[in-house]
Length: 375
Ligand SMILES: NC(=O)c1ccc[n+]([C@@H]2O[C@H](COP(=O)([O-])OP(=O)(O)OC[C@H]3O[C@@H](n4cnc5c(N)ncnc54)[C@H](OP(=O)(O)O)[C@@H]3O)[C@@H](O)[C@H]2O)c1
Image (cartoon, rainbow, N blue to C red):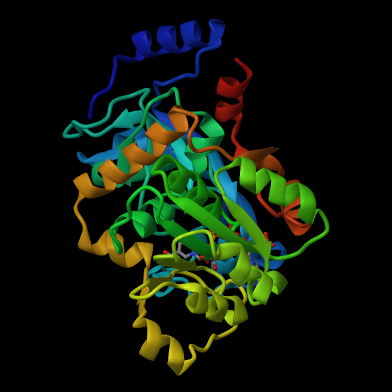
């Protein structure tokens, strides 16, 4: 283990405190973690506890990190509830730490760790990383270093929606500038990322969204963030929708995160030989595909799961994807409307989440994360 002698450690810690630089040298470290021992309603099953870590117990290939920020969204709640049959849910053994995505800083490394060092900013990658906590231990292979120039709040959600969107646009259909992609869940983390990554690739993106209270401003914001056309679930199946698409090439790719009747409409709008990828079922409703769509348009139906992708790919593939996504964040090509909350005040964040969320992302910031954001 790489560690410093105790007097030097004390002196460095004192110095970093005086200069308001986050302390990087630890022996023992403890902090808040939100855990659950059984699946259920978040407010019933989530427990706030203190977890302690001893740097001396770190394995040779492990890294001890302090979380800076993490996201809180509907998928996190579904995971805690044990509903929605999230991929990989069965592979975890309760109790578990909640939180699926976050960004952290390395505070200590095992003596065989080479790819990251103390003070590096990293994204832990994998299923259910347990991001709603102040500190955690990961293996070196689970963490990807990222640039500190990436806005902290954006980095905290990079491993979720943006990575799914990146794969959906990269892996299934050869897309060229000008090609049309149509999707539902346009206000979700994946949908917002599809629009922005699509725009950077020169694609034309059409989003279908639920009609909610602030529908008008939402449409305007989604257009400002890369969508060419935004329509409601009610509109997508109408003749007017077909007229709207007449001037564009027929969609080559449809992305379905919602299921239900809009998924059927997306498939109907695909051009000949088009592909629809289902990656989610937010409506929890099945969808049907009329036989005629197959016989006249020869469409393909595919599916995507990030967990399955991860299981079949190497560390360098994961690194390449995260670095591409965070690079776009750094270049201001991929952004989100963020509402910050304190990790310590999770109840407040949960209340905020229960209000109509639309395209706003809620980010939980730790005390250490706040130091970076304030200075
Ligand atoms: N396959 C994978 O690896 C993978 C990875 C990530 C996510 N997912 C799944 O993909 C879906 C979208 O993910 P996300 O991260 O973008 O979600 P998110 O950020 O939590 O947003 C949820 C999206 O679902 C929409 N939605 C909610 N209820 C709906 C309903 N009854 N009918 C139609 N749309 C509805 C929301 O619309 P409003 O804004 O109007 O509420 C919003 O666009 C989720 O089901 C998620 O579990 C799958």
